[in-house]
Length: 628
Image (cartoon, rainbow, N blue to C red):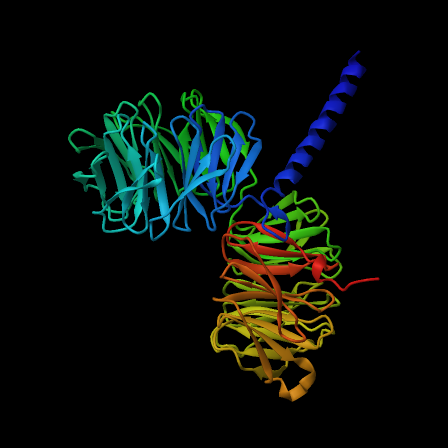
């Protein structure tokens, strides 16, 4: 009987594991932009909110609105439609509508059941930072970086009032429980109290010395709590406007505050990675929750008050039991700015570096994260695999280069000679040399096997933001962030060969074509440069590809050399024919700057990394040579 039970348990475990992997693969393909085949990472967390029935946790993220089952933590939906980050969300009192405010200056209303868009509210002229429903659900309040507070009639889906008075960007809005008052917090350091019906200004609370980042009324309507970016929390008497408590204890910005449903506890979240619990009457700090490893950006109580949810820039959403203040569940998968992407030589693994100081390794086929490598003390700006695939190399703002074993994930060695951020890496084709570019204005050549420094290549007068070896390893190219030059060096001894001049601003990316005949360059001058490497001393014959509307940050050739991809701050990936210089097509879908691109070894997939915190994998098969 015991053996039978053990067998049944093993079968159930196998089923659950299979279901988990299937689920993980499924959400990587939700609501993808045209041309994309997978999305790696869920984007950055901006705000967390409970649905009125407590069954759903909604997360405003850099790519859309994630919905989770509040009990299991399972992903239930991803709502997309905004063209930029979603900063704020709010459920209507009946749960039938979800409102979202975005960096794209709009507010969208979504059906709470179907998740379809009901309306778009247009009027703010800058980013929308906060939204709140009136208790009756007939009015929506919003505030924006345009310094205004706006009231929207939800029956007509039209603007009702524009409230002016703040002299800096709005950060937070909240209705009193009886719906008579509206409070707004701003970077002008004040909290404005308004008549919610007429929009008349009633009072201005001025005791904060810096930006007011978050506000919330107590459920009994007697108090208002506010967070300030000086790390303090204020508790105000709603009737008199008097500051009753000035709570100190956070060591960095206080960015989110909330009252418990019984009005007896205040919670505050901060960039010091901590959550503090306070008694609103005495000002006593009851407890500090210090589990998150990154800034805590949002907190919210469940409707019945039995659970607190917190969202952090460490990529996790944590649920806390409010009786014991112990963790109940953790939802992960959210990510931070992606700085670099690289495929392994076999194409099975994709590495990405991020601003959370780590490297993520992803299964390139399923989109499931394999592992995360930690050890750097600064953002991971650049990543590259060795030609044999046995080593992964990362360069960081902590000035170091780290070498990792790709099979075990173990740290192998740290190279420490650079004096500033390491922002570019390149392996020689045979894997014996490693080149690194740094903000210390140098290129360094390393013995890749021994980890010893071979040469320091000097001559650049600004940050070296790009390096690339030619396919035969005989030439090393490096790009400058000050004199806008590309320098060509002997790839073996580091001797300076030639300087290429033509770009008007920083060189941000370099790539040789697979046959070595073309050197492609990306620049902050909004262009992609193509240099004919077969012209010898006449390399100044530069072709400029124009189309991007702002900084071009990276370039990558397809393995057959017939397509060149470029990435830009305009959030567009452009594809070019490097022979003719003509545009082929492009990919649009990131909600943040596209900072890195890499082609899979088989040429069927292009990866792009973005400040929206995700990597998108794009289908390149339409651009492959046709076969009979």
